[in-house]
Image (cartoon, rainbow, N blue to C red; front, top):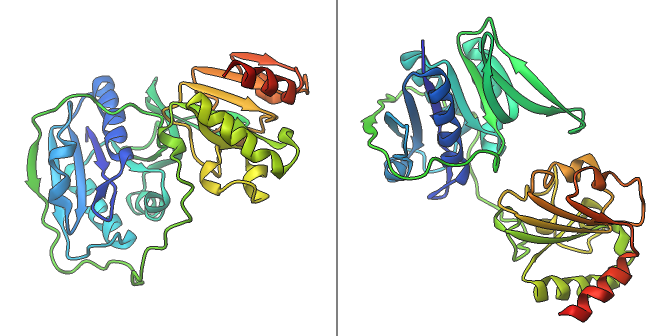
Length: 320
């Protein structure tokens, strides 16, 4: 047994960014452990995504054509199981998403494999693979080894691994699935889109984020205008979204969005609960303004000040 199998994710004709990110993570594992790197694509339009996943390090792309145009956890899990048993990889990578989580643990149980969810770092340990994930509400990082497992199933956190850049020369192979798949015991009805916030926190490079320190909903327009003048995307902490002051799409954190591409993050009046830090502590430059000298946000900030939030905003506005 050797190699890595990546289960690609796509929805309504669009390949998810996490698919290429997992391929980048798998390429890293291939460099550490060797073995072939395969990508499995399942669905009625599976063949449409093969060229996009022909990335450096990928040896083979398995195209499993099905009749179901919509994602079905039972079908994808069953085909992933068949592909794992046939090709015998050491590691199976699945997106840590609503779709991926719906079948990843069941796949691990069926295979009798090692398992870890929401993994954001991979490395080599004394006895093989080491995966790192958060624990206790993101208060600690947990390193997991799997010394007695011949195969390990991992769900990978989005926005944490860089896609392999360039193009590869992978062999594209049809993966026959037959007509006797059990599939799921439910039927897809429709997609219901959440209310649009008009922003994409995950792709923003510059975020001005606000928290409870702004004190009142009536101050929201002022900070929205400031973000616009700065050329920043307006973000927020959970209390702001939960209060209905801003659309949920603006929220950064564990129950919001990860600021995956952000390079500059300005946190105004945000204390820095672990759930919020989950979405932004990786950013290269973090500027935090909070009157509380013990605010946890200062533990991750590049630059910080306890100056009054509104005095800081006044001074910044005068410069624009």
